[in-house]
Image (cartoon, rainbow over all chains, first blue to last red; front, side, top):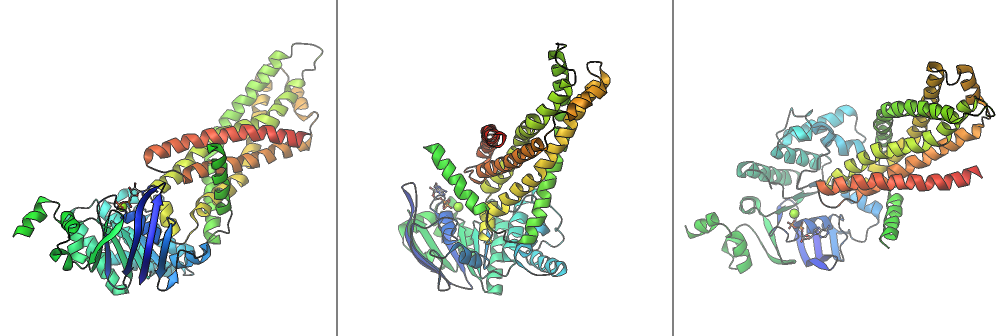
Length: 249
Length: 246
Ligand SMILES: Nc1ncnc2c1ncn2[C@@H]1O[C@H](COP(=O)(O)OP(=O)(O)O)[C@@H](O)[C@H]1O
Ligand SMILES: [Mg+2]
C-alpha cells in the first residue's frame, strides 16, 4: 500500500498539486484521472521522487520516501516498475536487451536464467519471438507491452503506468488495460495508473482518484463514478457526444 | 549571473557523475563501447586532417624560410613542434569537440526528452553516472591514443612533402624532426588531450542531460555543447600552456 499525504508541488510559482492525500491499495488498479495538464504525470513523478515534493509525505508500506537518503531510495526503486507514457524504451537496445536491462544491472542470475526470465515476461505480454527487434521496428502497442515486460521483470511490488494506452486504438488500449489488470492481480502488486481514457476507467477502475485544479476532487470505484452527481466528474465523463448519448439510453 | 548558475549546476552534476557505478560489470562494458564509438570511429577524420595539415605546415615553413642564414632542417623542426605542441592536441581536440560533443549531447538529450533518463532513475540507477561517466573515462583513455596517431601522421605528412618535392631533402627533414627534442613536449601534449577529453565529454554531457522540451531543444543543446566545449578547450589551452610551460 502507498499512502500519500498532503502532497504539494509547484514549478516556479505555478502550483500544480495543492495538497493531495490518498491511498493506493495492494492488488487492485488505482487510477488517477483528470484532464490533460491537470498534474497526473507530475503527481506520479513526485511519488517516485523524479520531482521533489514541496510538502507532504509518501509512505511505501510504512516507509517514508520523501526524507530517505538517495541510497535507500534506490533500494525502494528496485521494488518499483514503471511504464512511461511513451514507453521510454532504450533505443539502442533490442526488445530482449531492454527487458533484460534491469537484470543485467541488479541480478546475480546466470545468462541462461536471465534469458528464461525475459522470455517469461515477454510471454506474459504476448510478445514471444520479438526478442531481436529494435524499438524503432515495432508498433506503439508493442512498445507499451515491452515497457510493461521491462517494468515487471524484477518482480516489483509497485507498478506505475503513465497513460499506458494513450496513442493506441481503443481495442489495443483495452488489451493493454486488461493486461496490466491481470498482472496486478496475479502478482499482487500495488498498481497506480494515470489515464484520461473513460474506457479504462470503466473497464479496470477498482479505485479512481479524480484530480481537478490541483486537488483530489473525488474518489470512488468505477460503479460509483457512473452514479455520482459531482458536477466536475460528470463534465469530465460526459465530455463527448458518445458518452452523453450512452447516458441517455 | 546565468553563467555562474550554469557553472554551479555543472559542478553539481559532476558530483553525481563521479559516483561508484551501480554495476561494475556494466560499467566496464560501457567504457569499451565508448572507446569504440568515441575513439575508433574518429580515427578516419583524424588521419586525413593530420596528414594534410602536416604537409601544409612543412610546405609553408619551407616557403617562408628563404634565408641562407637559417638551416633547412628548421622545416622538420618547426613541423614537429607545431604538430606535437599545438596542432595534434588542440586542433584535433577542437575537431573531436565537434564530432564527439554533438553526438553525446544528442544522445543524452534524446534520452532525456523521451523519458529514458527518468526510466533509469526509477529503476534505481544513477542516470548521470550511468550515462556520462563511461563517456568521460572512455574519452580520457582513448584521446591520448588518437593524439599520438595524429602526431605520427602529421609528421608523416611533412615527410611526404620532403619525399615528393625538392623543397627539403628527406635526410634534412628527418634531422630537423629529431632536433632539440624534449620528451616533456609529449607529456605536455598528452596531458592537454586528457584534460580536453574531460572537458568535451563532461560539458556535452551536461548540455544533453539538462535538455527540457523536445527534438528542437535537443538540436540546440548539441550546438551549444560543441560551442561551449570548444570555448573551454581554447580557454584551458591557454591556462595549461601557462602552467606547464613555465
Ligand atoms: N518539469 C516541469 N516544469 C514546469 N512545469 C511543469 C513541469 N512538468 C509539468 N509541468 C506543468 O504541470 C502541469 C501538469 O502537467 P502534467 O502532470 O504533465 O499533466 P497531465 O495530467 O496531462 O499528465 C502542466 O501545466 C505543466 O505545464
Ligand atoms: Mg501526463
